[in-house]
Length: 252
Image 1 (cartoon, rainbow, N blue to C red):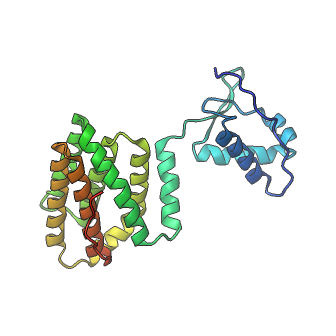
Image 2 (image 1 turned 180 degrees about the vertical axis):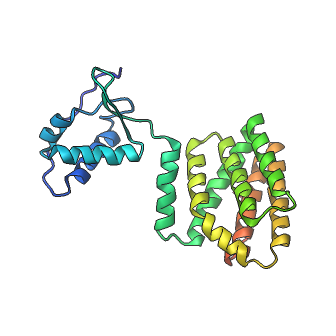
Image 3 (image 1 turned 90 degrees about the horizontal axis):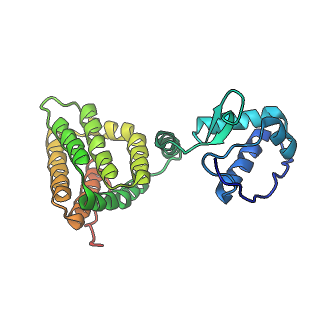
């Protein structure tokens, strides 16, 4: 049970597309702290009356927010039944971010710059707190990239696993979710670029060496070197695959 908290009354919404306005009303209460994880929404009839919308509008809003992982509904009767604010699962957040990255037409340069900021921080943190499970996941990814008959697709899957393992090792669930979203959104562009790369055997060897160097720095606990190697790796790979300029990494 959650504590009773003073909260402003639900205010009516008066415009068309009622379900979107109901979603906005629910989001506003979450952002203000009036609704928190585990809190129950008012019954459908009560919400419809308070917001001055149809019950169908409330139902549609709940369906949308359930699909996003924001709400969960528990059928039945009694205190356990109803619609509750859910702890947003990371896979729902990743799916949401992945689609926005893929559909918003961010430039490769923008995505690369975002990756550098994110993965520098992840590599640095991973070097300070690497555990046995994360180490094993990284080694498995490196070994999969070393397979003699690895295709571009399987290589990219292992490459993604390696970078996600670093983000996981950083201890930041948000960093891991963001990394997963960006890597997933970039899967097709990366594979298409790899297919156009005529010297793929040589390039894949360079990528292997760079990944091994990043791992060695993380495993040695060298946070600064791990961050610099991660940035250099991302910049060089983006240059080869997408023709981006490669400015020299700067020490932070």
